[in-house]
Length: 259
Image (tube, rainbow, N blue to C red; front, top):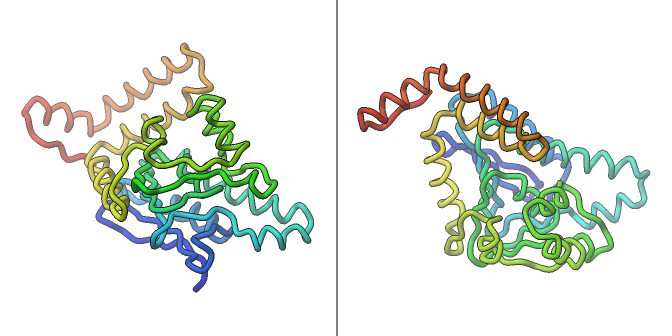
């Protein structure tokens, strides 16, 4: 069966499933391009309010295909550089996507599969899911934004344990550290992710887009710059039709319906 990124709809949520059963859902460049394209389509479709990324079957993603990487060692370095740039385009597309993105993880999430999870806004994982930055185990260094995310999310010593020593870490431990949002019984991660997505789908899309943009900008911004950005977003959203809907519904103790 060919490796592919399968796209389906669950109500107002797009579900992207990594499917490469012969190689433990390993990623490949065609998936990167498909991921970027899917998010581009979802961004312009008002019927889609959120995206869930998951793995087909009992595992999330084994990361890179080692056979392909071994083959690329015989090619000019530019071949692998282009492949990584494709992955990085997908990671950036997830981070800048104006709608919520949720990772639903069953089984292992290794290497770039772990990186993919870290780029999402929420991570839901089965209690027996395992995360590992396996790069140093095969004499490689990370990609997919792994060092950027983990250096910000975790103490340096723990990030070093994961990145330098290639240690495995459980979903339960990552939940305790605040990296995983929810843990579930095995087999229930996708259902929980869709439940979270549906609750987010009921909120005003323009407000969620503003919040994501502000969160993305905050780490590099001065307080003064961030306060100005918050002011501008607040005023813009106050004068959006959805604010009228939300405020009226709150005062009337009714459920709002946002456009």
